[in-house]
Amino acid sequence: MILIRKFRPTDLSRVYGVECKSFKDPYDVFFLLNLYELYPESFLVAERNGVVVGYVIARTIGRKGHIIAIAVEPEYRRQGIGRALMKSATQVLKSQGAQELFLEVRASNKEAIKFYERLGFRRTQVIPKYYADGEDGVLLRKSPP
Ligand SMILES: CC(C)(COP(=O)(O)OP(=O)(O)OC[C@H]1O[C@@H](n2cnc3c(N)ncnc32)[C@H](O)[C@@H]1OP(=O)(O)O)[C@@H](O)C(=O)NCCC(=O)NCCS
Image (cartoon, helix red, strand yellow):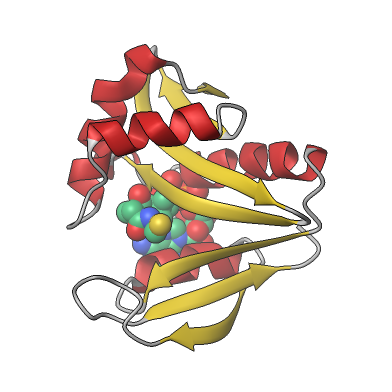
């Protein structure tokens, strides 16, 4: 069973662990805590057997919902946890007034692009050199959410 719930500060070390295993340029703990302070309603974690195995951070800007980051512990991937996190985050963003969703992803992250496309997102734009190391970003949108 997967439980999706709001992030709590005591989850920080687990979330940071997932973050470090998932991204080559992970957010540091201070930035993660800052995101929680800014968006406490839409920073969610996935728990399996009492252990945090994934998270999603999102925010609403006007009528748009922005997926800031999502990651699942590598050995728990392809079990529907990412989809469950996105479903719950979407519900929160819609309740905050979001009428469409968007996100950016590294152009080389083909797996994540497939994941988002499977959830109904469409590639709309390439953002040249969006990332600090010079890699292009891909903008994906889903409307309605
Ligand atoms: C992207 C990520 C969050 C997906 O989480 P997940 O729990 O594995 O996703 P799900 O199991 O819910 O996948 C849902 C569907 O998305 C698609 N999908 C997911 N991962 C995929 C992959 N590696 N390759 C192709 N399709 C994939 C599949 O259609 C899948 O359904 P299926 O398993 O029934 O075929 C996870 O791979 C991850 O943490 N990646 C590293 C961090 C990252 O890149 N985050 C996104 C950029 S912000």
